[in-house]
Length: 87
Image 1 (cartoon, rainbow, N blue to C red):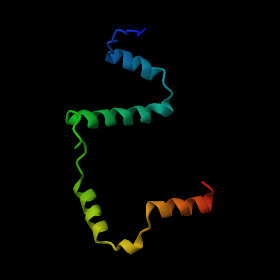
Image 2 (image 1 turned 45 degrees about the vertical axis):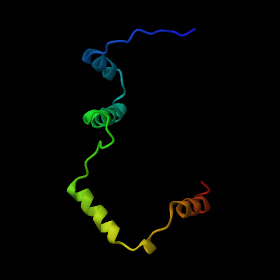
Image 3 (image 1 turned 135 degrees about the horizontal axis):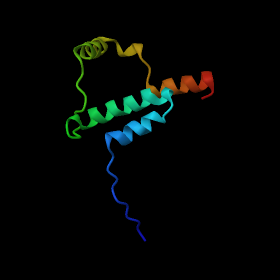
Image 4 (image 1 turned 90 degrees about the vertical axis):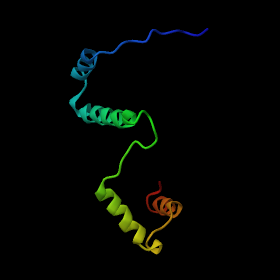
């Protein structure tokens, strides 16, 4: 037997009422989630949700010029962390 639920229409007033009862230390989480939703649906759910800033592109360009010898693999990194911290 499947239960059918009527879709509840949420209003801004409902959201405001929920926010009033939320501890202030969770406000940042709520705001982050709202920003996430706005970005997610900005392009109608397409995969190209985020556009890199010029600064981010410059950082990536600089990293491409770095020697691969300066880095370790993710697996090696995890192994080192496990050895050092017992994680």
